[in-house]
Image (cartoon, rainbow over all chains, first blue to last red):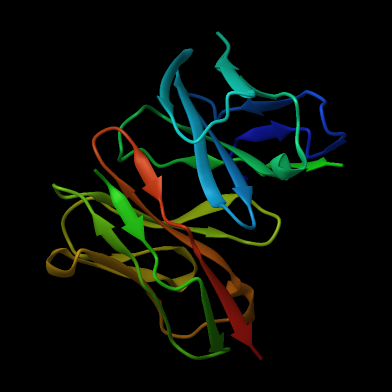
Length: 114
Length: 111
């Protein structure tokens, strides 16, 4: 158990809908990262937050947004969903923002868009 | 800019055989290097990491990796694989302020 929790575990929704994925980092970790993992694209970094502020952006679509709240939990919002958005979405956390900070991964949310 | 390459998408080895998974990185300074493992349906778990010092690092589950600066490599090894080692393995390189993950190598084990 990494100490990172993600809810829900599974999500099935229809095209055009909007969903919110939730992540609670390990106690004491200030950074939260979101990743998308699909069979064809592999593990893709989406976005990072540090202590409530956006820190880095990766291959995140404009239809996707995220935020980190004062209690450090984070939410990833996916809107106007398309079939291609079906994937595993991982949240990870780390103590800070250095490249030497190990990232601890949650179990993921499996999103299926039908 | 940082980058990391895992040249093998799939590797198949027999149970009990030795294993080496390749990882090459690109970074201007001494990087921070990591290997993660992802079992089916699970999140990624850290196997081992290298920051400095001894270039041969030991990790969990009997894995080790060797940092070779001259080859810009950080290959993962295990002397004898078990069926439970079947998983996807990710190499990652950390710079000043971020970690980049490779695309992963899926390991298959033959009984």
